[in-house]
Length: 154
Image 1 (tube, rainbow, N blue to C red):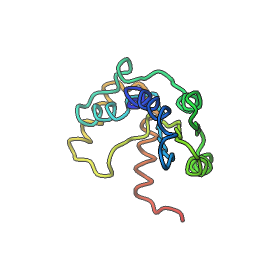
Image 2: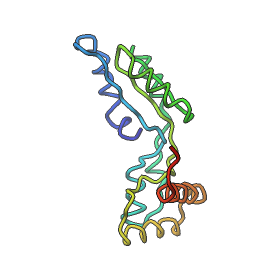
Image 3: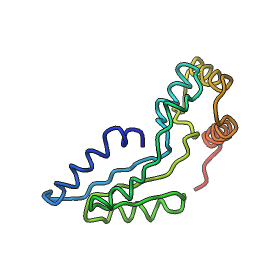
Image 4: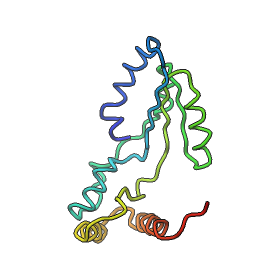
């Protein structure tokens, strides 16, 4: 959602203006909405050992799916895991551009499966420095790590 708020919502106006001229008007924009400049937040944690600096990382709420509808496009909002499949089916069968807004948890790590020792050290330092939602972040990080180790159900 951070990138979408920086530039994307402006480009959607252009899409709304021209999509009817396209030979194939299907276009899906997935917005992972977590009210955080999340990639920067996690880079600061891992690369610098800094906790999240909320006044610069939090972004205001914005209803992307409603915005799409206001512009004459299709807007779909997902805030529960069981809505994901039907939302994608709806988006893929749409006859006009779609904004698919998925509400996500900003504390789920965006770390790659293998990080260096130095990156792990900086990540731990960021937690020690005073991470605002430390308990939830530790829970999500542990959950992600365990899922990477245990075999997945089929």
